[in-house]
Image (cartoon, rainbow, N blue to C red; front, side):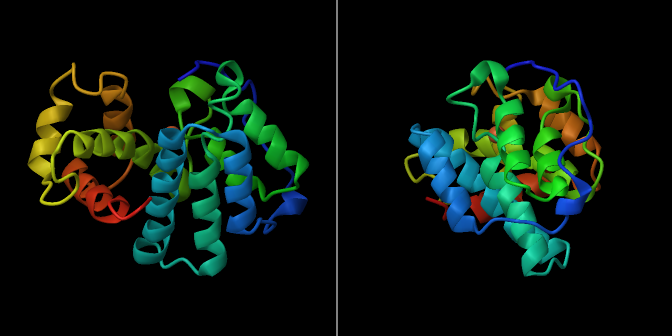
Length: 200
Ligand SMILES: [Fe+2]
């Protein structure tokens, strides 16, 4: 991940609170900006995790669940086209579209070490916790003949301790993110396995 500090911690305009976009429109943006299937799948997986978590664990209504889902779906939208300006470009695009500042702040806080924006609320802490872990669990599934079928938490924990496996996934970020929430790493891994296996 590029290490570009965004240089600000305030995003969007408060008068746009409540302004979301239909998920179809977000998918169109994704298809336009991202050609790499693996990266698109990553964002769809994080979106699914965010949406289901909001509904199942946070009692979110449809509007709130869409907010979580949009942040998940678009958080890396500019990564392929603008790796040196990752996060800044999608943030500016969503600001131009007058999107709810909560969605934009959530995207800005998905990597505090890189973007200099601390996750504050539940939605922001969860996108930070899901992001790297989702990619890691998927990498773990890809090397199994049966993929997600029969995959258990223990095997993922074991791989996390092998620095050479999916070396690009920051264990430091995973541990830091989990330390900020009241959910164990084990439970979170189980949630990721259960809720992203069907995403395609
Ligand atoms: Fe990501």
